Length: 145
Image (cartoon, rainbow, N blue to C red; front, side, top):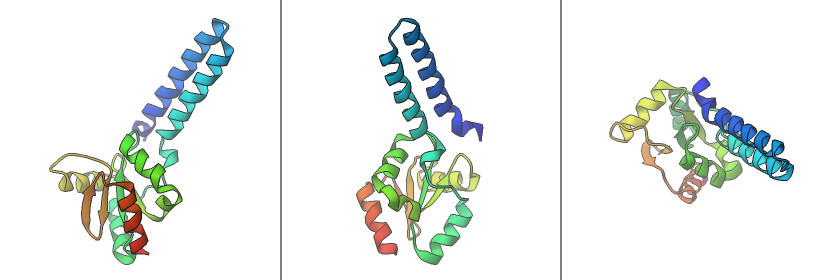
């Protein structure tokens, strides 16, 4: 669980340290701006931005029932973040599996990517697609409903 929060915590701490230094040098405007920037980066790289993760086995069971895609992801992945942001509210209709929290999910990603944990890996109708275009993923989601 701690592994998920390492990057966001580091970003918040670095931003705080820089802001303190700027405040001491009597540059409060820059300090506030940089602190806000670092905190936004921390939030965007935290698990809070992503829909709640479920286990790979449960995601596969649900996907077989309703045909919705499964997204294998991990915190700190810029490509996962890009996919999540581009999908907007539609992202909540997919099944998200955090490979850092679910060993079966990590194994499924390695099986699909020649032993590499390359994310995002999106599984549609049982077929994995590594780092697909968000527009394509949105279209697959529309077809599944």
